[in-house]
Length: 637
Image (cartoon, rainbow, N blue to C red; front, side):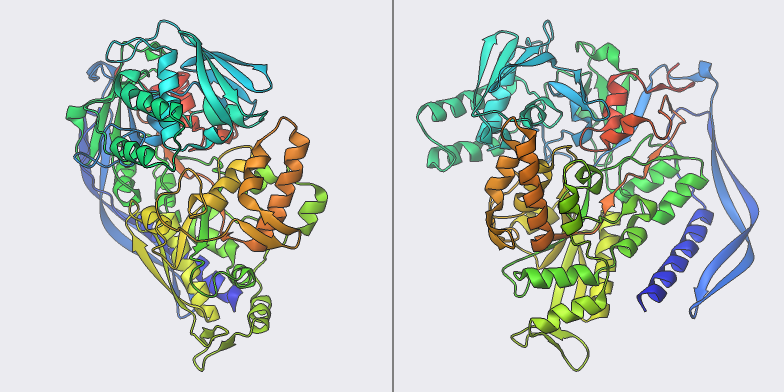
């Protein structure tokens, strides 16, 4: 039965691909072109449809309007080269320039172009591209020293010094950021040298403080709050104190008038609209000559907003999760698709205060019900790849951390409805007269499943999960929630089941377990806001005995002995596989459209820089900063 449904879904998807590819796209375009030409053409196309379970192919003739953009010669160029991006943001007045807190307009993967990190990590050779930092070294096993770039100035004219770095990490201390679990202090050796003082050796610490995860901010903007945080520390106060909470509340409400930047681009506040903003070249930046474009135009919105812009070749690169039918349109239009691993993806989360979600056996049964191959295929085509090992972190990373013994012990949870039925029956569950399961108290199992409505891939995954669970007898209703509101609801515990992320784009598994165990859980973690989240205790009974998963996650990133860390990671993987605090559906690979109308220099498929992935250490940011990407003919030249 499952195979039949999967074939029907596949045939329906093929039909949607063909039909989608044939739809006319008439879009108003503003860019470096001579004119837009619209003409009517007659096309014969084959349309494949599923009719009463059978595949029917027929040839139809259609008259469609086709809009084409005709490029101007180089001498007609405006003289200003542009790179067009797409990243969602909240426009003013809700959107603001405090990039530490919610609704700050940092633009995520493009933030290093404005507020750079100390270095930028390159996955394939484990090298570090110098940015605000010039070099780093271990002075001893608990002191990390960073030499900063000398002679740099912020966009407001203030000098870049060690004080900026100290103040950045003081603010992060106020925010209870994770690196402060591993360090006790940060001190200035001189105006351009800082020492991070660790509480003990840690092989993961460099990743926590040097990489693009931490953008350095200007003391001229944040220095007062940083000093007030240090004053609280000097008084012996901690995050549990009323004084700390009051300062944190005040900082969360802080709204700078402008973003002071060190990097090669700066947002033009006057350019910000509901639909787009412009980032102009910051000529005072020491990085200005690194980047080959004069400005960046960033378009606002999620997948539905960005799709027509990509089809119009108005966006040069986008990272949204585009449905398979849309991807087929891109390819048919000649747009290149880049597939880099994300090392993360969507997972099915449970509110453990709702019976029977708190039972690990029930969650195991749910894992057997869901065909994750089907779910990944209908959600993202070949870019949705089922996780096999179900270890809590990406299979592509797990191979280097897990022993053969651990790999053999991991349950793959291949789709098996009979096994799911056996588990539920063993728990004392039964079916109602209409086939819907009832739990051991006699309550019908009817649940609500939410996902970010604007995330096309996650929404498709949620709809498919709801369909599969309902077909099995666990009545599930999907409901889309605004993508900005959804994580707030989940962290507040205002959900029954939800689709959120698992894992992390980091080569060390401890970062993935931090997401899995704490990011949407009242048990702790830097990403947790007020609320219970999934309400899952971090001290759990497992076949290995009682385990404090929160402490073990910290221990997995502590110390200088990677062999000891691997032993802990293997324990965590086995515990995760048994307990399934969430069910990872699949790992997402990018299906990122990269138009080559305005931009040249994209590396060939298979280039190792794509191992950086689109988000964690985004390859597009590296390619811009190194000048690998440059304006194509007619784009300002």
